[in-house]
Image (cartoon, rainbow, N blue to C red; front, side):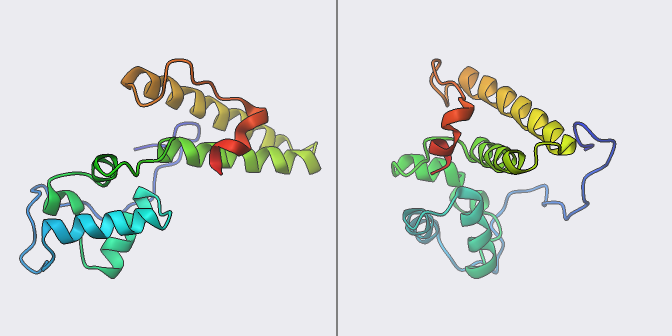
Length: 151
């Protein structure tokens, strides 16, 4: 899929198998994987980071194939979900970093354009999450209070 504001294509990567079946070489069961997810979430890891750790350290290639649930659903069941969705949190963090850069480099036009693009992406994501009920209807992104969202 192409990038939104540039004419570049994404980096190619491996594709997942079509069938979501637990591989025969995986020796963890559903309960063990869920306990690992809860343990990692309590240490402050994000769902994406938990998936990477499970893949790289615990030989769990696909959580959904083993547990029939996503990592975020498991976290929601155990009341460990984050206040903001992970992708929105990452965009807000990027926005804060660009604003900090712009304070010291006021003539950086490329950073100004990056800030505009990031803020528009945040607006679209907020609209989507409000529509799906993951954010409250009165939630609003405020640039001056953005640092409180990522801490």
